[in-house]
Image (cartoon, rainbow, N blue to C red; front, top):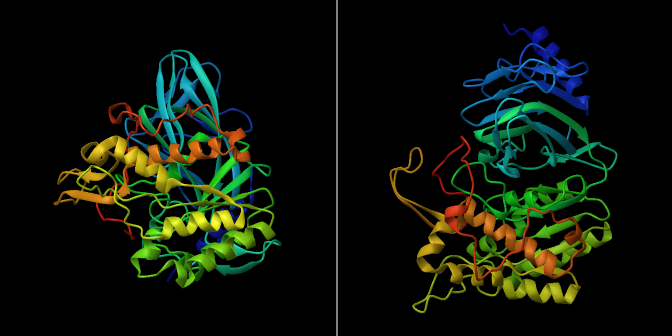
Length: 440
């Protein structure tokens, strides 16, 4: 017989914790700063208390003595993940990193490998505070009064994702991550960039797959802008409506927010033409966004890695990019022409080097991968990073109002001179899968 009393008590406890919106965690040993929740190497996640590490294997607590907050920390030789039950919304997260008696090197990602901080290095006796702003979502559709009115129809594979699970999950990665405090509080002022699209936009959970959408947050100033990625692999404009993904956004988007729309790969794949609903749906979404006071931005689908005999990219997207260009002009909305930019970028890389931007790996590079991977549509993390820079470049070149919130992490980008693959920094996460995402 099930212990319903214990189950109900656990639910009440986790629900009460979820209603909190400001959290202060002191990472380290047994000494804890006043007003902070203690987190040690034994703090495994428990829904009864509402927080903890996904896996405590390999975690170490180091105490340097002195100040209870700044002189002890948690570290590990492999990536580790800290989760908190938290209500849906935007949050500012202060991360305190470093070591009073040693160096540190930390990369921070959230949810499904969404890049926030890259290669943060501290010298001996250096403690730094870094701020990130994160969008946390669940699959429940609520109206403006917070009343549940529906649900997003998730695919089976999405139920394993870290961004539909009613938790905020932070990934600490790199050579020597050392974390001594986290403070989480709501952000009610940030402009939200809602991303809609397919597998080339989605926050991909598994290495080696990636998209520009999960790299984009790295290039914006925290507190001012937050990226909310609602894209999903295999989706068309129609499927995005049918699964109520766009309904979720319509009930959350605020005046001054942005709606980025990139579809085409799968719309084409399923035999649709630009006249069979694609244009009408784009126009409907644009009008709806404007009615809600949001700013629609169309993004043409990037090219596939298909070269002709002259080493030029072949258009495999029929008239979908042109249709989007025409609609952007007709409706007088911003257009990020990722289709044109990717052509220049891929041709600059060339037929062979461009493989480094896509999921091209020999057999057994990843678990349960007996065959080589050779995908001309989906990107690895390097390719996703380069495409994200294309998106940011277009925002700046067009002087879209968002451009004033681009961070110093973006230092310009020449499409004809891609970043060297050899200098690209990305310590891999623990989540790996050779199964190809939905879509093509």
